[in-house]
Image (cartoon, rainbow, N blue to C red; front, side, top):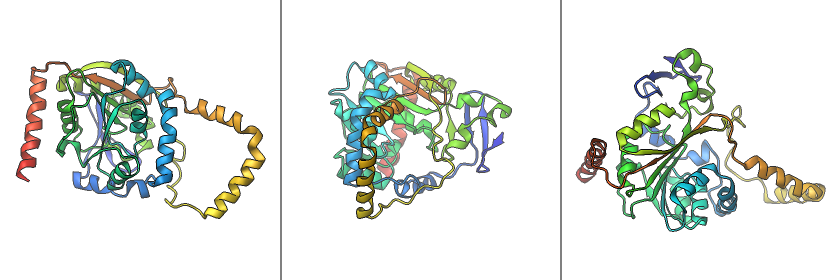
Length: 318
């Protein structure tokens, strides 16, 4: 056992090769944290300006996003496919998927993010915890979890629900910090940057964890890789307030910058495009794509069905 910089103890499970936070808050406390998340913790404009930014980045994401490239290769094409993103945030990933012709559905627990997705991006939303929510859409061809499974109090319940929703032959894509980088001992884990990057994380999956989960869920591993580096930009600064400056001041500064730097805009654009390209080196991120068999009659499938029935019974009695 060791302690993160926030003082919370972290332990290691040798059976599933998972590092996890001990003494985690309740689900209600976790849910409360994410109300106002996009205003206070990660200040983002959730208005018409923010929507234009999301759609503007969609075309670029189609060209350079590693997750989209891998998923497209396995599905054959995204056009006409039903894609659900769990923890969709402000919809950047789904906007790119929709540009590719897919039918998209978002799942979110953040109230302000749900409002933005529905109002500004016109993306249908399943509100609240997916494990507890009703599903009124066609079975998804793919369910995507970008930087999500490290957050829930009960990730296995969420993954069971996702596996049960997938159509036969569908894919479950998981992008999460690679807890395998921490090793298996406290001595190596203390030096791992992942325990310092984002203190909202409650568990840290490793490649071995994915193998164990795939077996329990009755899914096959289609793709498994580690890649990239931790995003450390601004980690030492508090988030800025979510409000815009005076419109006149911004316009004046913009005109001055354009006049001064116009000759360098093309070069800067090229550099920016290069910086956005996915980094294939490094091992901070863990990316797995799991496939659901066309027929799932084994004990793992039974586990998923039992978990789903238990959740649905709880919903009916509420």
